Length: 156
Image (cartoon, rainbow, N blue to C red; front, side, top):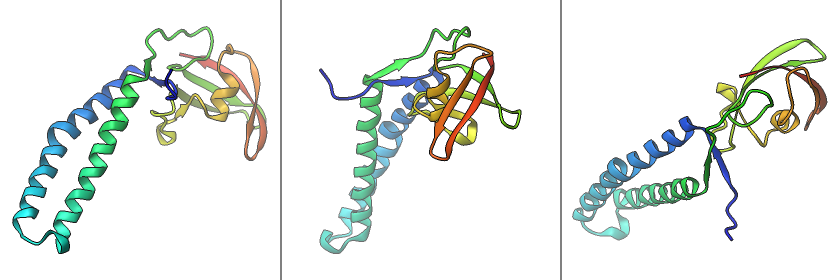
């Protein structure tokens, strides 16, 4: 049994990771290998800043490649998105009960979360509060700033 936790991805998130992996393996990795060759050609490696920089970049790229490969191995791709209850892959409109302000969020796995694009993680306080509930339900959200109520207005 693996200690790695399951990673939820939308089809878009899966494709983005595959694309990034392809870029790292087929573009960035060869570029770094070439930079290492050029730096080695400059001579003494003990005081060669170009060589050190290329080695550091190589380590970053290789770590990211491993990270993405592990994510892809453990990914659960959300394909069957239902709109009767809130789930990962849904776009949800909620209304903050106290001020009647509405917000729309796309609920994604933690690796795809992007608050600036209104993509919130299924592990976020709002998502935890509304996952599994229906339109019209009012839920209490526990946040670091205190709790507040939201009403589920629409599920797409």
